[in-house]
Amino acid sequence: MNTATMTDADLTQFLVNDAIPQDIGNARMAYAAGYFESTILSLMARYPEVRKEIEDRVNFRKGNA
Image (cartoon, rainbow, N blue to C red; front, side, top):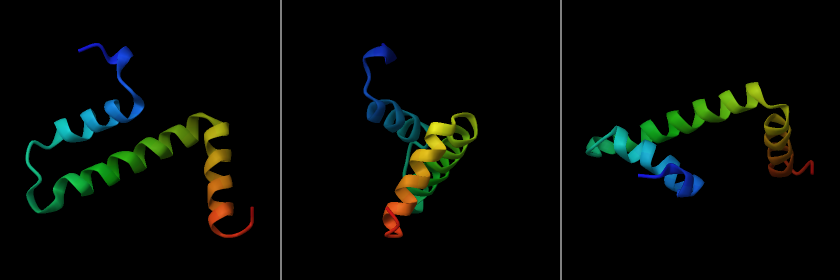
């Protein structure tokens, strides 16, 4: 499998779907939520522009845009 040709959505879906073969009691959703949360936190810590984007989204949702 050539990951260079996969979309961002393809890559993340592969990581989540491959991690848990069966979705027992919504375990896949819980795993995905934790996986994406840790990924976002990691990106925010490494890249200030990602943190700024998250701040902008929060401000927009709070009506402070």
